[in-house]
Length: 136
Image (cartoon, rainbow, N blue to C red; front, side, top):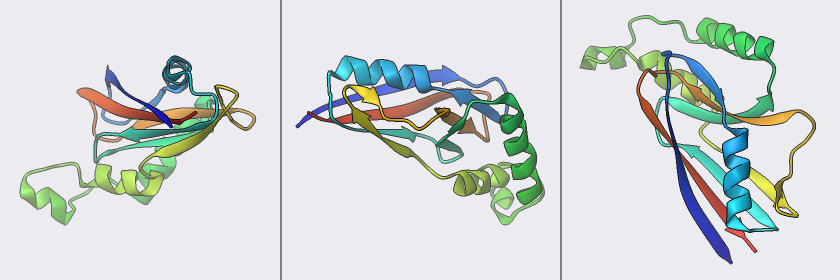
């Protein structure tokens, strides 16, 4: 079995931001030369999520609105520690942690319209995403 581990780095401009990282993941899978296997994509931050869905701007805005309704910014017990980001941790729990995608014939094996997104809920600083490719 072969493996390749890479990290993607970028800065988020907004506290809540959604970044399409599909192209970067495709490049790493191509670099790995793995034809059959899987790729794990994991945000290396406790207030961020990686998920797969449609790359449609209206859907991104719907996610933001939906998450703010489910997890309003208010005084949570976590904020008593001096932090102000409890809502960010809760949003991450709702959206999930990471994704695993099959690789078939050297390509991400996606359904129609599927794209990989990094969702940040406490941004405005440098971020890191782990990409681990495994297979033959």
